[in-house]
Amino acid sequence: MASRNIVLMLLIILILTGCSQQVQKQGEQPPRTDAPREKGFTGYVVDRKENSILVVDPEHKDIGTNGETSRYYPEKWFSNVPDSQIGTYVEVWTDGSPEVEPYPGRAESIAEYAAATPAGAKISEADAIRGGIYLSDGKEISLPVIENVEFHADKGIWTVRMRDAMSTDDNQAQIELEVQDVEPVESVQEQKK
Image 1 (cartoon, rainbow, N blue to C red):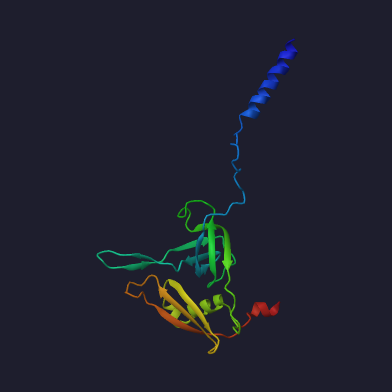
Image 2 (image 1 turned 180 degrees about the horizontal axis):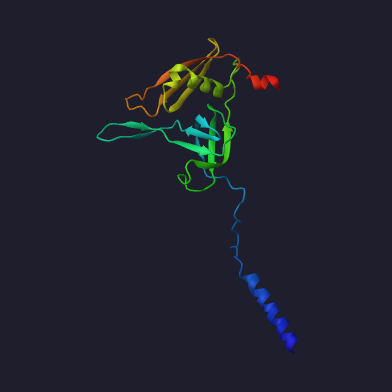
């Protein structure tokens, strides 16, 4: 009889523990593990140091004081990004830790959006942006904001329009740079392979 009571008690405990799990309501869908993520931080890579990149969003916010308007361009450094090159348009998601602790935000994943190379072009949009940033006029910009990139097949040039996000003048030092559409030269390391 005692063994029967012990078996009955164990059976009741098992039943109660099974019932204590979260009950799903009738018709309710279980949470999806493949649900789309929140929107990441998007923009152009304008600088890189070791495995960190600086991403600047070309969409500005108008801010100002005393009736003056000024443009603010969101920008963030991300670490843990070994491959993204300057000029590439990216979307970066962080690992969920606060974005300023540690600074820079540690990238959990990154998506690169390569614009299609136009017919007749020898270099990509990212190559043209990189070339514009490295031109002497482009080097004068302390924090480049890429506004527009166009390829002119008839002239064989790319026009890269950018601003300096750190400039305080009314047009924030908007400049247009022309980048020749010539095939990139292979580096010495690539030639040895």
